[in-house]
Image (cartoon, rainbow, N blue to C red):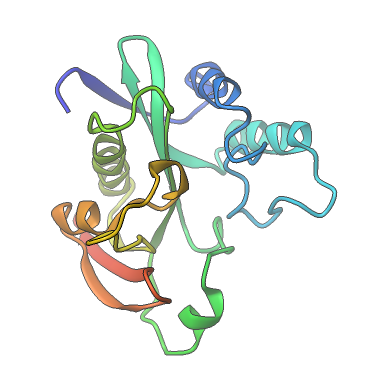
Length: 190
C-alpha cells in the first residue's frame, strides 16, 4: 500500500472520483456506485441519472466512501454508510432468513481502476473506510465479501471484495449468504 493516500469522498474530491468512474465506463455499465442506495439502478435509470443522483448525495453529505489516490489520480474506492443509507444488498433473502445483530455501518462496494488491480488498492480502500468509520464514531460494521479460496474469480466481478482481505482487516465470518458470499463483521473503535 506504499505510495497510496486515502481521502474521503466529498465535494472537494468529487472531480477525482468522477474521473475514475468515467475512465471505467460508469463502473459496471453506468452504476456510479448507486446500486446499494435507496434509488438503486436499472428500471429505466440511465447512467446520467445515476451520476446526477450520486453527485447530489455527495453534495448533501449522504454518500460515504474512502478514495485511494496514486499521486493526484483516484484509482479506487470503498463505499460505506449506515444500513439506512445503503439498504440494498445482494443475497437479501439469505441475510434476512436469520436474525442478524444490527450493524451501525455497512460496506457495500469496492472498485479498483482496471489498470491498477493487484497493487493493494482494494486493501488500502478498505483500511481507509475503516479509518473513516472510526473518525465518525465507530461501531459494528458488516459486509458481504466473497470467498475466493480455491477458485479463480475476475477482480472485475468482486464488487464487495474477497473474504480473505476482510479477514486480514479484522472481520470475522458470521454465516454464509450463498455459495461463496459471507456476512462478515468487525467492531471499529472511535
